[in-house]
Length: 257
Length: 257
Image (cartoon, rainbow over all chains, first blue to last red; front, side):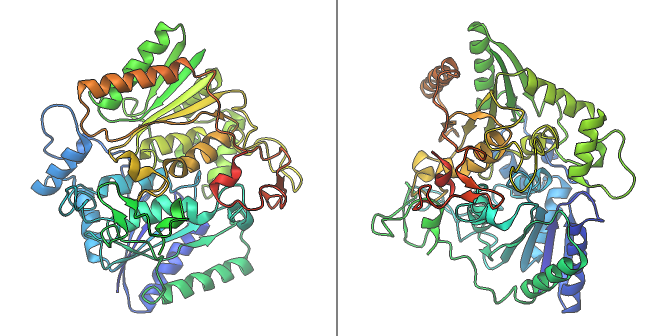
């Protein structure tokens, strides 16, 4: 398989850095091709702006329209086009990051905002009152798998069903559903390491073991069963679940089959 | 009142830019003092890194420890210290942004990561197995109000209880609860404008009216009733809701009184 790791941590000599290096070695030893987008090392530009199009239109900058134009005309900033090529090359994409303020680091959010161009990751397919684009299960990433690999200093119970931070699956829903499922990725359950502030050798060995297991089963792990937007479960264009689909369910969990 | 608007949009001639300008004028006309942190105009550095401490420690960069040291020793990057001063000055803070990929733009996430120093926004107060810091309702922002002001191209039903994007209050929970309630802000219900891709004059007049209403009532609007971590509802250190507190509730909504 071709595997892309999109990785965000400012220090290579960190737990995240070690886990990333281990993942690369482990995947390569298993015969996979691996590329890493090490966003801090690449000094990735986080802020989406008019400079992302090398041939900007005159007049006020309109993020979506300008992204569409640049993608269509081949005038995207080269760093954006290079990341899109990696995504097209990849069979599986791993997003690895420390959970900062309950989401991905800014530098990775900026990777999403800039690489996810109009026509590439959104604004794909017919867009009408009958078909609201190829998204949420369809799109250019269809057939590829994606998985989050997350570290957090907090304890597992803090992220449990009644934990104060909120359940980890709900905190990660805007990413798993809104960023991965949206352009068509098949989303694997996240790999989350808790209480990582102080990690001794025994614990680190255990983490490596757990990570290896997940890497060994990337192509066989059952994905998160998100519903397909155009699979018949939603009214269009309201894009609400049809009345007869699990009528008692509300919120994020309603979008799981 | 002293009101800080933290604002992220790359184009001043945009709907967001117009709403921001209107908010400033309206608040000043009502006698308030207003400061704006216009993150794009300031070319705010989004990525947290070792350069955020002007006197970095030797050895590998440890984000939390380094932030703690820089905050305590007064060696933070001047752009960070300036934003912290604005927060201390403010009675109310408005965070204004377009919803990009179901969260705040990267440049604003990077504002949170860098300005929310250890000792300033987290790592505050006694930290033991009996008291897990002054957070979630306590902390240095206690007594200040905060409100999100968000625009999105999506339709309101897409963000409803059974809408495909997920309910807007759940999508914003990691921000309202995890970024605003955490350091002690009193959190006001967000002001969300939907379907903003094409806004005609009539609609814009309606939006201005709605915004004015919210600005006129910043000090009287009932806040979101998030529970206090140290208010008796949580077991510590597990930080899960006590068994007798709304035992039937799980997920984000359980943290509302």
